[in-house]
Image (cartoon, rainbow, N blue to C red; front, side, top):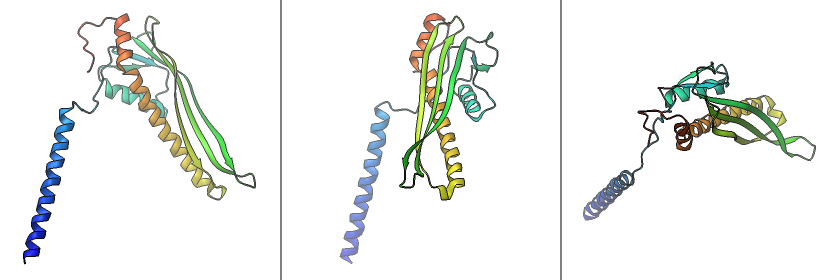
Length: 193
């Protein structure tokens, strides 16, 4: 009987200790100023981009810009825009990384590269020509060629999502917003902190 009581008290003490440690951890995280990144409004209301909206990558970029900065409209008319996001290149490549003794491919390296720039309506450079790159490794087996083609397509889709997210973080970065505001003062606009 006494051993059961000791086990129960020991377990209860352990649970209370873990609970206290969890609460302390939550208080430390809250106290250090950590917060999730929220929307970052852009200082312009019209953004032109030549990224095609009818592609999976383009629709993700357009939707994310509008979700991240609800006051910004993405347009296909460059004359109306206060800023221009120009896609200069979007290239996929596949390279053989390793071959087996018979010369068959064992592994591919998949690359996806977006080259872009951003200017305001007066031609001031907000983002010079830049590259965002994603690379993935794909083990390959000719016996499962159709499955590997599906896997390759899925990897390219994941890389497009990654590049789109990184592009949005870049165009909403404080240095881009500050540069825009230096050339185009916008009364009443308060950059997100």
